[in-house]
Length: 328
Image (tube, rainbow, N blue to C red; front, side, top):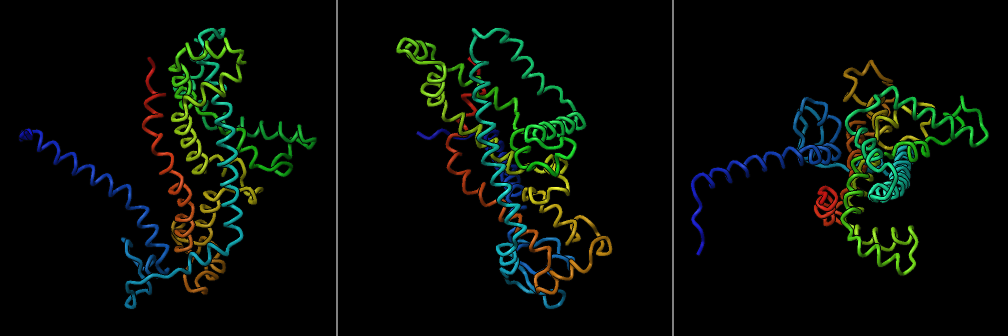
């Protein structure tokens, strides 16, 4: 027999679904706008039209519904964009592997009650979540790491920006995340001690126990942490811009390249055409599609890999967070 829903419960569900729908629209709208803008003409975006969900072409009185793929044609044939795209893939792939590598090792060590000073090490790990060293100290840390890399390569440490490839600095120096280590540590602590004891009786070494016991039994959390690291690396912008600067444009990720493109060729960041190179801007105008649709085409292309990968990892997401977020 179906239970009759009370008035208060009905009102709660209506209000909850209403706010969920609003939240979903707010999340989806920017992506739909980017798609519509990338398929529209420059005039449709700069002619005072504030909402572009349906692609439009033309300008002024000739504005009409329609779509053009010229911005994507430009993106697919632009060498600078694909260099930046390959840099982002490089930093995301190797950065995620590196971050996972030492996060798993650190979490495994901190999960062992027999380790000397375990409480102190865990406290220092959590302390970094409460208090940050600040932007200046973090920047100095990254630049000092760059000097170390240059010295190890036998080059002048003071000229590290021109001596080493900055992509490796982004990969190695920017991978620490205390939250992910804690998630992995809590998951490892949940592995039954009897299984580890059985492996030790069979003669397994510490590394074999980690790779043959702990990692296979923690796949959900590891996949979740890998997703966190991957998205963080893919969206990484601020420190890549500050550390690499203009001296290593060949190492820019796509996010830094997009920012530079917006500043140079569009009015999205700088409001007047006089503030940037009018000749460069006119180059895009003469091609028949303008720079603004090209910028949105870059945005859409940069989102596609995450949209492809996320559904395959999503099934591990809730399970992985629950396993690593609860300490028994």
